[in-house]
Image 1 (cartoon, helix red, strand yellow):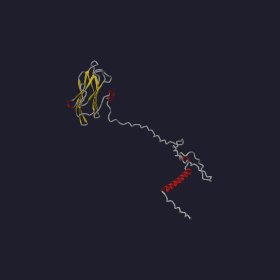
Image 2 (cartoon, one colour):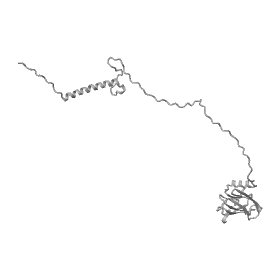
Image 3 (cartoon, helix red, strand yellow):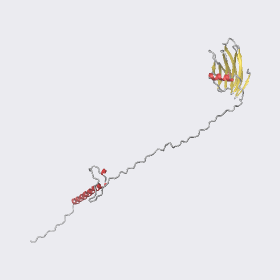
Image 4 (cartoon, helix red, strand yellow):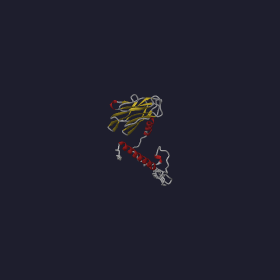
Amino acid sequence: MIRRRRRRLARPLRWGDLRDALWCSAGLHAVGLFALTLLILPRSSLVGFGPLDTTIGWAGDDTELVAPIDTTVEAPVEHEPDQSDDTVPIVEPTPERRTVVPVPREPASLEPSGWSELQGRRARAGGGSGELTITLGWDTGCDLDLHVRGPHGVHGYYRQRETAIGLLDIDCNARIPVDEPLENFFSARAIPGTYVIQVQRYRSRNGGQPVQFTVGVWVFGERRLFTGELDTEREITVATFRVAGSHVTWSGSR
């Protein structure tokens, strides 16, 4: 009996066969990449794979893999400017000192006797001054009083020291005699009008002897000096003047 050999047909391709082929191919690729990584990357970058030999090479090849050279570049150090002793400092020339000798000039007007002493006393006593300044000075322990009668009936003296025409800021020998007695009346602005200056011997302390006095008047820079004598306790008129604008007119003066 003759048997016929049945031809075995090829099994159709299934999904599982394709999956196995893909897994096998992926595995081969992974192994290849891992081997290539071992050859290319330095040892420091292979963390967790244990100690490696950097002399790994191809089979039959004597070439060694050398670790990469550190190529860190240091920043250049900035040098401070040279300050050696060879540097020559620049010295500016000192200006020449010259002594200037003032040339004497002729005074505008001669200063009458008594001005310096009267001004010195007022300065030492701390007296004020202004456009109008009236100062009385004498040399005994007697008590003399300065009276200034001005515009609108204003009367400045020891009982009314601060007025609309000025201020009596110094009044000496009222109680205790001083070495340089004086009285001073001044105003920063000279009020227009007529002024009358009087001197009174209020109290005698020299046995009734006459007392000589000096009165200096400053009005807008113009100066007048008056002298007199009091032998009794009375009041005398020393000077009379009128202020108009920035001008002064004198009349009825001793």
